[in-house]
Image (cartoon, rainbow, N blue to C red; front, side, top):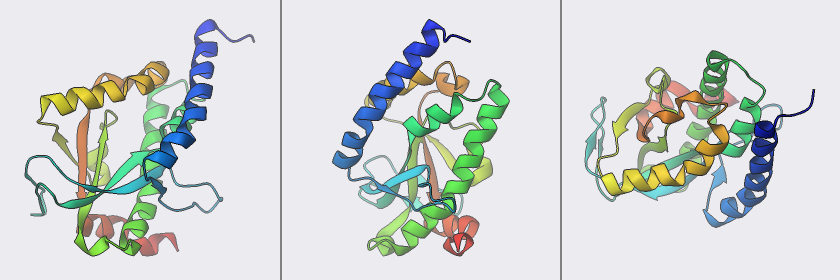
Length: 195
């Protein structure tokens, strides 16, 4: 069956995005958080980050304050969107994202445990519009209080939204922080789980 104009446009945008992604990866100091059993790299790419927002108290008592060190987690969005194109149902798409994140978190735990700056890192942080169901994975969802930064993150996600709108319906949500303390990450996704 011939592809529609919309499908062709999405494929074209993904091809361009895929070409730019290695440059972004090289310039952003990101690292892949491990390799899965089938040889594929984890869906997560990570880097150390010095937090600059307002103080946040997590449910386990961990305080995240300005200048604290965290491990910033990034979903490999090009790969994720490419794989989501194979699913028609929003329920199946949501389940797929959930399983990818759940499968990737032990690799994040392993990476953080062995990181040279592990001792001073308080946990992990991400920013996403795909925040539905994240509490079930152990994350705490926190609003981005700075309106300028929230606008900037929304704008930076526009290319992803343009490509993914037809395959990821939750992209109408505003971006939010996802946070998890180091202790909770190790407790839920202890690095030993991937051996």
